[in-house]
Image 1 (spheres, rainbow, N blue to C red):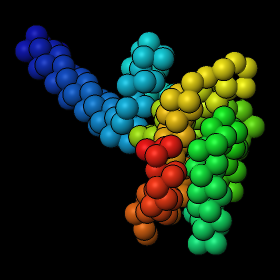
Image 2: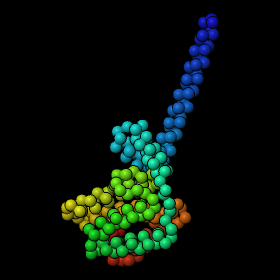
Image 3: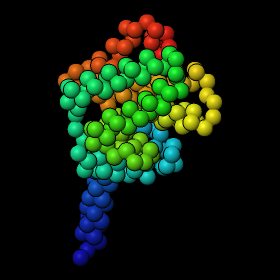
Image 4: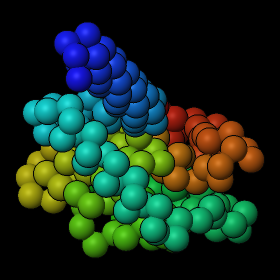
Length: 202
């Protein structure tokens, strides 16, 4: 094999490698874009939490695979209406018993999750699971749950409790969502027509 042939072979191998590397980077970029689009702010939070984009993306992909194996279902109209009424009761309760209303809101969110098919035994796992289908509002859940948990151990201000109710409401509304058949928030904000409740929780 003469020198020119060897050079041609080396160049050909180099070109193939360059193309393979370009394709790999393209696939990685597409994967990153898909995850960033799907998880939104949760994508950036995962990177901060994991300290590394590659590891964070692996964690998010594992969440997706886990949730795909769960039997998540939409609520029936009857279930949605029952949960809506239960939420309205707790929002009205907030006026006189804000701490109790927040604790009940936390349990109500868990009930909706369980009914839809999410495992609810561990809070961190609940957050991870719900972030797959509800990434925009999952941080609301973290904030609200933190306030509710602190409220069980120490005194928290009414303003913090009000904030928790607002955060719970955002997640609750998304959990009632049935895949686009009706607007997400339509079924849970009717109680804001009640002036007393509106003054307590905005």
